[in-house]
Image (cartoon, rainbow, N blue to C red; front, side, top):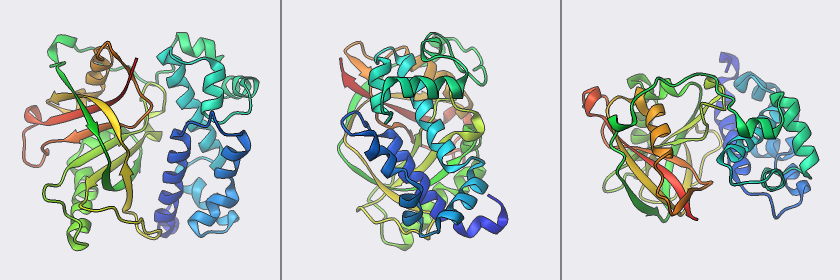
Length: 300
């Protein structure tokens, strides 16, 4: 965001979080009018305590996209992931992401990506290749765990996931979250540091990837509109948990390996994909870094 718009960043973060929650939701059982009302500029302007005009201006300055271009891109990129999973029909996807019918979805998809949903299902929309690493170089052991509910503080980031793996990013996010929690008596008995990765780097352009740096707290709290540090509840979900040891730069390839090694009795669910950081680059050498990857799963 341009410097003159920085005072509005917490408000834009609130809007982006609301959009993320809406896009992640299953809209199959609601009319398209309900989805459209939820993402209307009047509703988002009310949330941000800005005028409609100012929201349009500041949102574009921060994200580089017009508000509804941004929303449309997110739900169409979500559609690509659903197509490539092979579990969903076009009709199911159209309803899930809030389109009125499959024709409207088909036309919007082809206009944005330049290919039909069927073509995207067969191929890939990758923006960059992941270096080839032998799968047997990774430990693919997993455990099945469930999160019931977990209150979090978070700071949101839009940009290349590579930056989230740096010590500079750690200082401005997780260190800031710890300081905030300490000052507001929110520290749990043992804090946990998590990342929420919203986007697939094979679908979303690297500079548009969404990431939340999160820290557990001892009790749920309400987000403050004018604070960049927001709060949320991680919902109940079953996960397959894998542990990666080594450089964060290999995480993309690790994801490729573990997604091919999901337990046979489960399918990849639609919940958050999580990373839990068991140590830090500030105290551990790169080859000793431990990162748990939590894949949401549902029973076949």
